[in-house]
Length: 319
Image (spheres, rainbow, N blue to C red):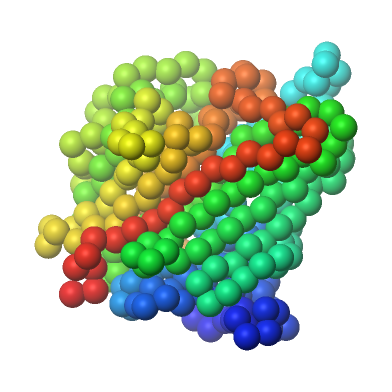
């Protein structure tokens, strides 16, 4: 994989673009993160050359939504329809197979850099008022490599409208553990409740986790075929952690703060070139929140909201 890197000396990105736009390379110690102009996405995070996320080629857009950030809603809106003060709002249908509006309004958007250094980059894109979402909001995404070489991501939505604006924020990273086949890894997610979805992946009820959705004791990825939202997460000190671990003890962890009470777990055999791939998606609310109201948040004019998540690895990751 090659990329046009962000220049810390000039504070300006190189002009060459890949299919996913300008590429911003962040380096600290043995940590490397590559962030894309398209959808403010995470294209790669690695430690000591050990790849900790799935990636893709220069000529490709993110397969399966790999690494993209999601605003002003995550997941799906049923039929692209919701109501604002009794008035029908019709969003574009972007998931034609299920007749849903999926993953917000910035999936195909270019984000502009507003700050950057060797260790961090901050990108921002506006959502302009449009049919189905008559609000002016800004989504800002900051990626940084911390002193411990972990990746920290902060997503901030700001309402520039004169009216309150609804939102759900999320992200869509896929984790891996170097060259170990993901199907050989163990996935652990400390969540007590799953959302029961219909065949359009729209939640209709909830129930305690069981079977393939009970990941609290760890399950082998090769035994799983799940596409499920989980909640009632175990927050320790305000942080919930979800881990992929290998038999040799090495692990990679996605963490999310308490602003994100949901995580969507997607184990798929459709990721290009991989028998199994694992997406672990932090979210502030579930699918179809614009209709159910479940964990839907509203921003007052000039108000901002920030969610935080990140990826860390065990100390022996590069051994």
